[in-house]
Image (cartoon, rainbow, N blue to C red):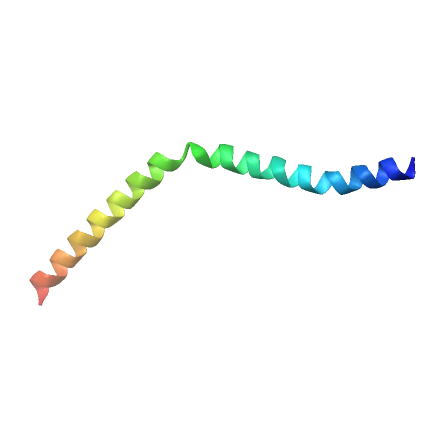
Length: 57
């Protein structure tokens, strides 16, 4: 009985970690497109600010 308890405790950590990694990967998998759009907008804003800065110099 004691061996089953120890084996269960030893397996709980890796199984729990695998489950957490799966949940994180599953939830972040669908957010790739908004991040790309955000990066595109930020790059456009940087280009605009650089252009404005050059006109003021």
